[in-house]
Length: 194
Image: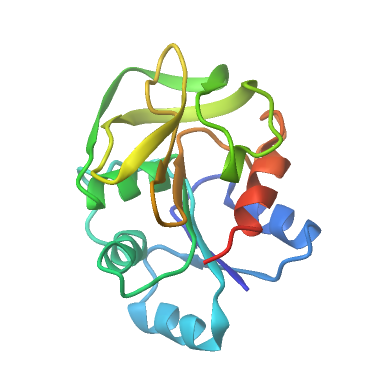
């Protein structure tokens, strides 16, 4: 079962729908839910975790399930594949010791990214993609142990991955139909092994 932590993005339901269309059972819980609910779902057998986007900033938001999960993954207490989308990408970077800053300007709409390192989540995807972006903040320095996967003219770290572990972050929204090969990117993550 895939667990999606919803940070209030208007697109989170699309992640769940895509996962189900790809043949995966998916459960969605709100980031402000009690940790006991998360622990109960983990006992039922979660195979992968996705942290959604949302309108908040990692600087202003108090600890929630997203940051709790990131800390558990960072410390090795949870060893499941993890994907952060937009705010979730920033949360992973923040908790793992990277740097998140305000972007030069807010972005909303389509943009183009260039994939610098393919494989894993970008397996079988063209080097240049039109993607849907909706964010204020962005990752400006990678956490230790991570590598950059993609960039754009407006955001140097559009995607990142841990060098040894199945932990990924994307600044754009693969769940939105405007993103080229978005379903393929999500499928690649869902097929990732622990």
